[in-house]
Image (tube, rainbow, N blue to C red; front, top):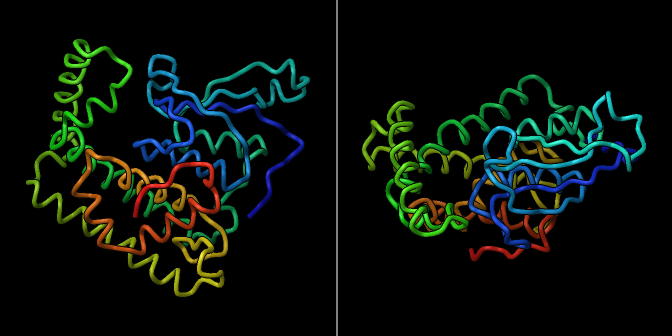
Length: 274
């Protein structure tokens, strides 16, 4: 894994949607981004932020000094601040600036394709199964967590808007056209696939019993590891996803994988209960 250019320093604030420091949040994309930064040893602060301030209207986003070509030669104290959004685009930009390594830079085309396909399975399939479980099947729990900063009377109205929009989105995307039983079966199949991959990786790992092991079986993490860790930690904590939690609990290698990453890279965070 290529080491980031330590001559370029960033003052980074990650806006996570919630104020709780020292804790994971329910969004897999927030933890995905944090893992990407921590795998590179890049320090950052956290804050709640807001959807109104987010460049693309979604969480997470970051504020940092601008190291683009137009500002990189300025003194650090005079560099303007810039907002960057999206859990995939933020690392890409920081990598282009030379402050984050390219996790997939040493992969051959086949493994790059595998990595991208596994990320798509999580973000373009499992994410929508989770959205139905959280926002439709366990609506009130999800509403009160996601809309914590909104006063209760307004929270009811905003929650109903999100419920209706989510229902329409899931129907148009396709997930909303399946029964709960069909979605549950598909959701379990995805988790079982990752369980099988991790079982092989763990058995082939050259590390010790407490060292992290990685999805593609290499000595270093790749992009899919940031994404999978985000999804596992999200399920481990989200009380609006009880069925998903039961599935992950039934596949012990998933918590073993995430627990080793937590112990190595997130020792300052409160850990979920296995």
